[in-house]
Structure formats: C-alpha cells, structure tokens
Length: 433
Image (cartoon, rainbow, N blue to C red; front, side, top):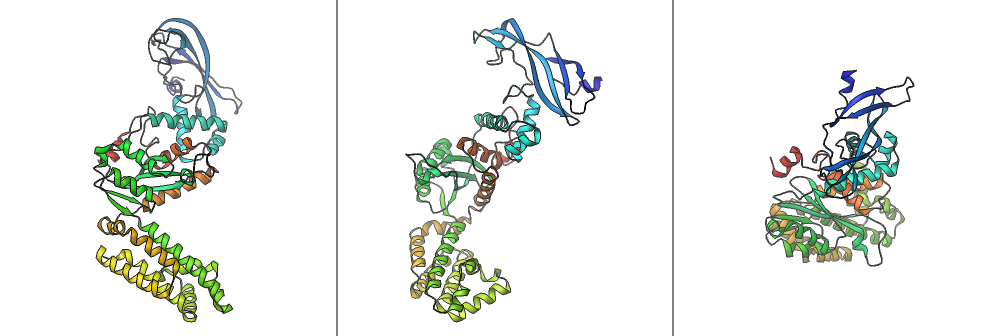
C-alpha cells in the first residue's frame, strides 16, 4: 500500500487512505491529510494569511488508474489575506490553473491531447463536457501567451494570409476576413498572427518587433498583396522583398485557364471542343514532362487541330522555365520573350498578367538573389485549413489565433512548460543551438 501512496506526491499533503470498491465502474477515491507544516498562503496573491477562518471540503479529478476515474478528497483552509483584506482559500499547488475541478497533472494531460486532436473529440474520449474542455484549452493557451515573446535573431520571414471567417462586421471589408500569418523561414514555425490582411496588420507586427530588430531582417517573402509590400518598404529598410514563386505561377495558371475557357467557346468543331472541356483544365496547366502518356496524347491531338492551343502550350512551357534560369538577366530575357509570344498570339488574359508582373519585376528579380519562397507558409496554411475543417469552423477568433500558434508555432507543451516558461528545446531552436 505504501508504494501505491507514492503515486500521489502532492506537496503539503499526504495520503490518509484509498477507497476502492469491487464494482469495476466505481472510481478510485484518494483521501489526503494536510501537513501541519504547510504554509497558509493566499491562492490569489500568494501572500501569507493571518488566521484560519474555516475550511472547504474539495473533490477534484486526477489521472486515471487502470482505466478507472480517480478523485482526490482533501480540505482546503480559508484565511484572511493581509494584502487582499478578504477571506480567501489557501493556495494548493496541485490544483489546475485552468479549472479548480482537476489536478494540475491531469489538466496538463488533457491539454496535451487537445494539442493533437480536436477539443470535442478529446472531451468525448476523456468523458468531459465539450464546453468545459474548450474553456480549459482556451485558458491554458491564454496563460501560455502571457509569457510569449518573439524569437530573437529574425532574418528570413514569410508573410501570407489565410481565410479566417465568412462573416464581417459593419465597419469591416473583405480584408478583415483574413489573418496575416508571419512565419520564421529558418525555424519553420509561425511566430505571430494578426487579424486582417491590411497594411496596419503587418505594421503592428513590425512595431512589436521594434525598429532595431526590423533592421536585422534580410529577406521577406510575400504574395502580390500591395499592402504587405508597402509595410515592408516602410519598416524593413535592409530587407529584400521577394515575390513568391508559388503565387506568381498560380496567377499565371489562372490567366492560362481563362484563355482556355475563351478558346473553348470559340471552337467550331464538336470533336475539338470535347478535348478542351473544363474537366481537362488541369491537363492544360500541367508541365509536359509530368503528364501521363494518355494526357500527352490528348494534348498532341488538340494542338494538332488548333494553332491557338499550340501557342498557349508553348507560352506555358516557356513560363515554367523562367524560375530555372541561372540569374535575373536570363530570367528577364525569358520574360521579354514571353511578351513577344503573348502579343503575337493576341491573348488578352495573358497580356494583363504580363503587364501586372512587369510592374513588380524588381521583386521578381530578388528571387534570383535569395531563392526564397513562401512554400513553407503554404504548407502551414494547409495545416490551418485542416484544423478549421476538423473543427467545422471557429466562432471565437481569439481561440482560432491561439490554436494556430499552438499547432504551428511555439504555444504548446513541446516548447513551453506548464508554468508558461520556455523549455530547453524551444531555447535551442530559437537561438540556433
């Protein structure tokens, strides 16, 4: 029995006895006795209390024993706090920060489960109320966030947006339905999230980072969102702004698809129209060396019957070679060659695409200096989308932001202790050790 008592090493208390019924559905009940040497401290401020003014019988749940629920029974004293000048309950170390109905170690386990699964599923698994579990998870993340600081030595950042909510307030526009996600490319973690994708959102991050740290940033990769470009130009004087390859190719593919749809409507022959149907749109966008033999035969047939599709295929293949060039000079030569082909072919959709990209060519050139993309951010965005789908959406945007930092950042038990302090793993990752 003494060995069993050692499973409950609660500071200031010792096990008096354990009650266990033969019924397999009945819980363990552990009764504690308060140590007389335990200091009488206020649970609110931690100051000594003057005198005992009563006691309260408590029952809180602990880690399960051999699949049985376990409850801890003890007396919690009351006293008058010198600082608060009120009657307060004494501080008990093993009571959870998030809820007074669980032990700290059991609450930590529930929080760990919520880090790797949906809160509703965790509540169902552990037999707790879904809303109670949700509140405890939110409280835990907010407590972690109180001690959260930005990692030091930030030099390579990726800035991207993710769609957050379907509704908007009266004073909001579409930009406010997004989150701005800032990722440290070297550490591979989300380090900050701001509501909306306005310039003010990224401005707020740079102000928190500070002018001195902003001056140390070397590279920032973004999409073609103009507000991000203006914010980077204002706050990061030494940073190279790189337009992301993924977004540039995506914009080009959209222009190609619009061209395909227009040509499809103009085709006179029924047989050729069948080959250009919308269900084949991804075949048109795919690089030629990645197509299957069937897809290759499909494209050869439609290009043989229609010159416009042949020209579109040549333009697409040439564009896909743009980012494989050795330097920005060679890339510009390819880009100018694309302009000639596009204007000769008379594709208005691609003309518009070329003009827009030409206006931002300086940031495209920067790609060949740094070879940095937001590919990591796009991968993280897929994790965020999976998180949102699994939860069937989030109503509380504060909870959603913290949940993203928990799943894709440092706001979890791998990098923070139960007291909200950085772990050795987090310090090593942040400092590059």
